[in-house]
Image (tube, rainbow, N blue to C red; front, side, top):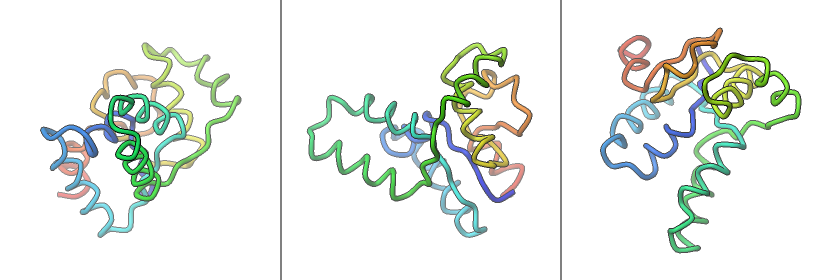
Length: 136
Protein backbone atom coordinates (compact mmCIF):
# COMPACT_ATOMS: atom_id res chain seq x y z
CA UNK A 1 0.00 0.00 0.00
CA UNK A 2 1.60 3.21 -1.16
CA UNK A 3 -1.09 5.71 -2.11
CA UNK A 4 -3.70 6.84 0.41
CA UNK A 5 -6.74 8.94 -0.38
CA UNK A 6 -7.73 11.34 2.40
CA UNK A 7 -11.39 12.29 2.60
CA UNK A 8 -12.39 15.90 3.25
CA UNK A 9 -13.08 15.21 6.92
CA UNK A 10 -9.45 14.12 7.36
CA UNK A 11 -8.28 17.47 5.96
CA UNK A 12 -10.60 19.33 8.32
CA UNK A 13 -9.40 17.20 11.26
CA UNK A 14 -5.75 17.87 10.48
CA UNK A 15 -5.97 21.62 9.90
CA UNK A 16 -8.92 22.72 12.05
CA UNK A 17 -10.13 20.24 14.68
CA UNK A 18 -7.97 20.07 17.78
CA UNK A 19 -9.62 16.86 19.03
CA UNK A 20 -8.53 14.90 15.92
CA UNK A 21 -5.32 16.71 14.92
CA UNK A 22 -2.86 14.48 16.77
CA UNK A 23 -4.25 11.28 15.24
CA UNK A 24 -4.21 12.82 11.76
CA UNK A 25 -0.69 14.13 12.23
CA UNK A 26 0.53 10.76 13.52
CA UNK A 27 -0.82 9.00 10.45
CA UNK A 28 0.89 11.52 8.16
CA UNK A 29 4.23 11.30 9.97
CA UNK A 30 4.27 7.49 10.17
CA UNK A 31 3.00 7.14 6.60
CA UNK A 32 5.61 9.55 5.26
CA UNK A 33 8.35 7.51 6.99
CA UNK A 34 7.13 4.50 5.00
CA UNK A 35 6.95 6.39 1.72
CA UNK A 36 3.19 6.80 1.40
CA UNK A 37 1.75 9.42 -0.91
CA UNK A 38 -1.29 11.27 0.44
CA UNK A 39 -3.90 12.28 -2.12
CA UNK A 40 -6.93 14.53 -1.88
CA UNK A 41 -9.44 15.53 -4.51
CA UNK A 42 -9.91 18.94 -6.04
CA UNK A 43 -13.39 18.71 -4.49
CA UNK A 44 -11.86 18.46 -1.00
CA UNK A 45 -9.96 21.69 -1.55
CA UNK A 46 -13.22 23.44 -2.52
CA UNK A 47 -15.08 21.94 0.46
CA UNK A 48 -12.26 22.91 2.80
CA UNK A 49 -12.23 26.48 1.47
CA UNK A 50 -15.94 26.67 2.18
CA UNK A 51 -15.38 25.48 5.77
CA UNK A 52 -12.75 28.21 6.21
CA UNK A 53 -14.90 30.98 4.69
CA UNK A 54 -15.24 32.84 8.02
CA UNK A 55 -11.48 32.95 8.59
CA UNK A 56 -9.63 36.14 7.68
CA UNK A 57 -8.70 36.16 3.99
CA UNK A 58 -4.91 35.92 4.47
CA UNK A 59 -5.22 33.07 6.98
CA UNK A 60 -7.64 31.16 4.75
CA UNK A 61 -5.37 31.53 1.74
CA UNK A 62 -2.36 30.36 3.74
CA UNK A 63 -4.10 27.23 5.03
CA UNK A 64 -5.37 26.31 1.56
CA UNK A 65 -1.86 26.74 0.14
CA UNK A 66 -0.47 24.55 2.92
CA UNK A 67 -3.07 21.92 2.13
CA UNK A 68 -1.99 21.85 -1.52
CA UNK A 69 1.68 21.64 -0.54
CA UNK A 70 1.22 18.79 1.95
CA UNK A 71 -1.07 16.62 -0.21
CA UNK A 72 -1.20 15.56 -3.85
CA UNK A 73 -4.35 17.10 -5.34
CA UNK A 74 -5.97 14.77 -7.88
CA UNK A 75 -8.27 15.90 -10.66
CA UNK A 76 -12.01 15.53 -10.76
CA UNK A 77 -13.66 14.71 -14.08
CA UNK A 78 -17.07 14.37 -15.66
CA UNK A 79 -16.40 10.64 -15.99
CA UNK A 80 -16.15 10.46 -12.18
CA UNK A 81 -19.52 12.18 -11.87
CA UNK A 82 -21.11 9.62 -14.21
CA UNK A 83 -19.45 6.75 -12.35
CA UNK A 84 -20.49 8.14 -8.96
CA UNK A 85 -24.10 8.38 -10.12
CA UNK A 86 -24.10 4.64 -10.79
CA UNK A 87 -23.03 3.77 -7.24
CA UNK A 88 -25.54 3.06 -4.51
CA UNK A 89 -24.14 5.77 -2.30
CA UNK A 90 -25.96 7.41 0.58
CA UNK A 91 -23.92 10.57 0.07
CA UNK A 92 -23.14 11.64 -3.51
CA UNK A 93 -20.10 13.62 -2.33
CA UNK A 94 -18.62 10.40 -0.91
CA UNK A 95 -19.24 8.67 -4.24
CA UNK A 96 -17.32 11.47 -5.98
CA UNK A 97 -14.47 11.11 -3.49
CA UNK A 98 -14.41 7.36 -4.07
CA UNK A 99 -14.21 7.78 -7.85
CA UNK A 100 -11.36 10.26 -7.39
CA UNK A 101 -9.50 7.75 -5.23
CA UNK A 102 -10.02 4.92 -7.72
CA UNK A 103 -8.97 7.02 -10.73
CA UNK A 104 -5.87 8.21 -8.85
CA UNK A 105 -4.86 4.60 -8.14
CA UNK A 106 -5.20 4.93 -4.37
CA UNK A 107 -4.97 1.78 -2.26
CA UNK A 108 -7.13 2.93 0.65
CA UNK A 109 -9.51 5.72 1.65
CA UNK A 110 -9.03 7.34 5.05
CA UNK A 111 -12.22 8.88 6.43
CA UNK A 112 -14.16 9.34 9.63
CA UNK A 113 -17.35 8.07 8.01
CA UNK A 114 -16.48 4.59 6.69
CA UNK A 115 -20.13 3.53 6.87
CA UNK A 116 -20.96 5.81 3.93
CA UNK A 117 -18.49 3.95 1.69
CA UNK A 118 -20.17 0.51 1.78
CA UNK A 119 -19.98 0.38 -2.02
CA UNK A 120 -16.17 0.70 -2.01
CA UNK A 121 -14.01 -1.98 -3.62
CA UNK A 122 -10.89 -0.62 -1.95
CA UNK A 123 -10.29 -0.60 1.82
CA UNK A 124 -11.87 2.27 3.74
CA UNK A 125 -10.95 3.03 7.35
CA UNK A 126 -10.41 5.75 9.89
CA UNK A 127 -6.95 7.14 10.66
CA UNK A 128 -6.87 5.11 13.89
CA UNK A 129 -7.94 1.91 12.14
CA UNK A 130 -5.34 2.42 9.41
CA UNK A 131 -2.55 2.92 11.93
CA UNK A 132 -3.58 -0.20 13.86
CA UNK A 133 -3.85 -2.38 10.75
CA UNK A 134 -0.97 -1.15 8.62
CA UNK A 135 1.41 0.93 10.72
CA UNK A 136 1.23 -0.92 14.04
